[in-house]
Image 1 (cartoon, one colour):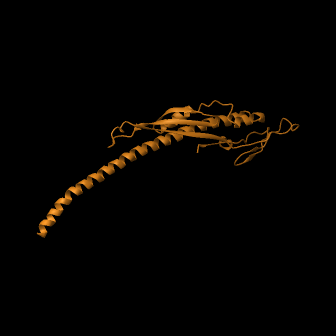
Image 2 (cartoon, rainbow, N blue to C red; image 1 turned 135 degrees about the horizontal axis):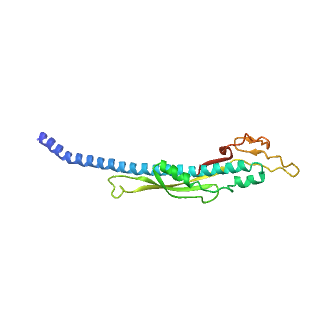
Image 3 (spheres, rainbow, N blue to C red; image 1 turned 90 degrees about the vertical axis):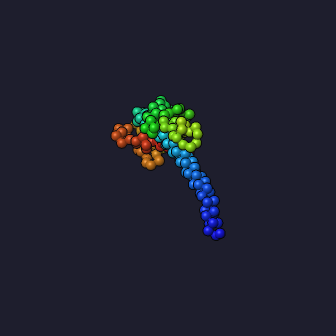
Length: 198
């Protein structure tokens, strides 16, 4: 009697075991699908961040070059530190960096001076998964990079002479500029910081 009951219990447990294993397999595939989608989104965000930073760095270098060009005319410095005087054409660099991260640029613009926003879309799709309709989906992401001036200065007063340049006070160093010896000038990264917007 007892032996028969034991066999009967074992027979009832087998279908439950099958259901539990099937449920676990389904959950594993569901987690895999979520992981695939998250990885694709992360790839899109990485591409967007890199593209926005590349555009901003390109413009930062142009601004620094403009400052060097006008270094002997300190009345033009403030406009340069405010982001004026150069074309905001860094989107070409954004396209290059997005491509290096296996994505394409949907849009790139400068909403205001000293800023770029880039929207990208991944070239790869999420791929096959148990979630229907996701196999052809691509991820999109956007990012904004900011160019921040790091230096301040005070124009010399009247009577100081036209050959006196202001001291440039930057985040990491002070620069006493000699108009007769301009061999040692700040680098672009001394003049401007580039970072992603908070």
